[in-house]
Amino acid sequence: MLKTYTGGCHCGAIRFEADIDLAAGTWKCNCTICARNRLWSFEAGSHAVRLLAGAEYLQDYSFNDHVAHHYFCKRCGVHPYEFVDLPAENRQYYNVNVNCVEELDMDAVMAAPIHYVDGLHDRWDRVPAEIRHL
Picture 1 (cartoon, rainbow, N blue to C red):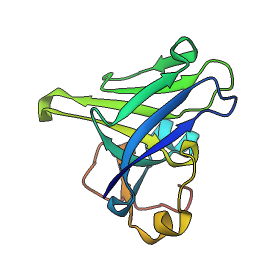
Picture 2: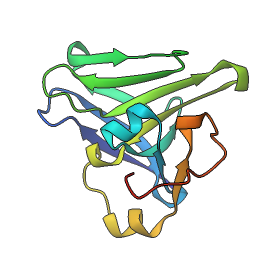
Picture 3: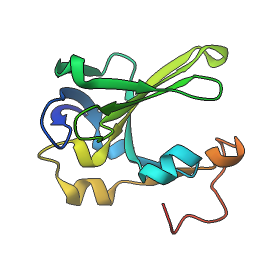
């Protein structure tokens, strides 16, 4: 069931709200940027995240094929979410950083499945061989 949550970066400059279904579970990826940021995320629809404050502090980092926009706060460096645009699949969505969402029922989050993807090898439909570090 979708519920609207608020969240933000560490310093509070960036504020957002996101429609999230806790029961759908969370995601962890082993690609270089997700692993280095230890991103643990909720997947949210393409219109499910709304920036409430701090547009001037939101910096976009994109690399390689530029389908993922990894947003972070220019002031504190925290990555509140990323936006993924996959034109070949006609699919757009957000990955919302679990640790940037406020007032979560962590029992519900932990009871939901954790999905792992092998982004390091562009095998998005497979679980990586090693997940302990994620």
